[in-house]
Image (tube, one colour):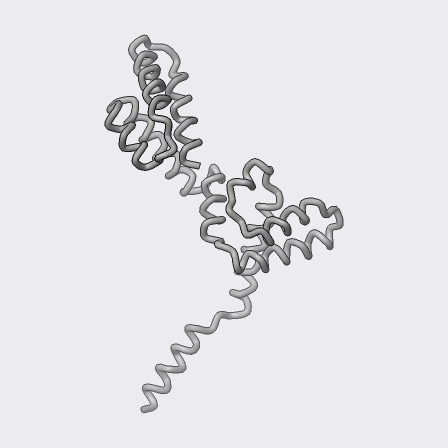
Length: 171
């Protein structure tokens, strides 16, 4: 019987989160909020944020007073607790050139570009299945241009355009 009580107490301790851990998590959310406040408008629109959080971010951008901005960032951190922070962090990672997520995303796009150039229609069909908004005709034109440039040993401008188009599709 005492083993059962001791085991139950261990479970209770596992469920308790230390005050320091809560502070670290709260600070991490505030830091994520600070990144959102400081990023350019063009990047901020890529995030699907709750309306209340968007308003708080725009309000923080207007503030010049240091203490007021600090309090607004705390408020943003509080709002972040109810938002989908996993999606926000994933999108931030895709934008951060140093992150593993960005490098993997970049590598996948490069692989798609190579597949389209080398395989042609079958790769284009597979990409259109993945991204229904893709323009099949534009992809075919870029693929033909890239192959022509390779054959004529010209600079790979069509290949770059294809990569840019793939990146726009993925976003």
